[in-house]
Amino acid sequence: MAARADRSHADLLKPFAISLLLVGIAAVIWPFYRKFFINEWRDRIVRGEPVVFIPECPSILAQLRCGDRYTLVFRKNGNDQWCSRVRKNEDAEGSEACGLDVDAWDFARSWRYFTVEGVRLYYSWRGRVIAFDQRVGWLVAPENLALRKAHPISMR
Image (tube, rainbow, N blue to C red):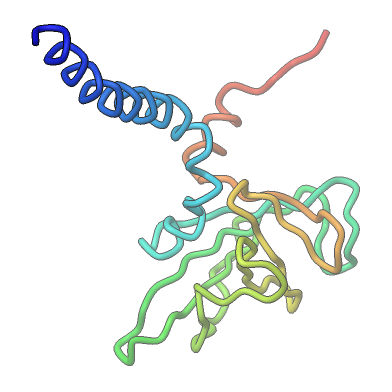
């Protein structure tokens, strides 16, 4: 009788142990794969925080020059429409463009887009920016850009 009770107890613990193991594995792996499910750049845009677009060098598109920095700020206006302002380098902010959809995407669910200098630029969850199937730059948070300027890399 005692052997039967031990066996039924072990049979109950087996699914619990397997579940506990799966939850533990998921807890370890999730931080590495969460970016596949969460677009931190889109979240930053929705919160109204500025995003800096930096074109690749050498520049692929005539409208975008190497060394330029485009600061984008998105906000909702009184009509619940998304508006954006783009500031090139240290110039004054450009005019506001409204009627945008920050959740719009064209060819793949993970690529969202915005417009700079009349060019539609697509960005991924990784901050990579493409146009016309070519990499044209990347996104960076302004605070990270300030840190880079404060501590430049030097090669000797």
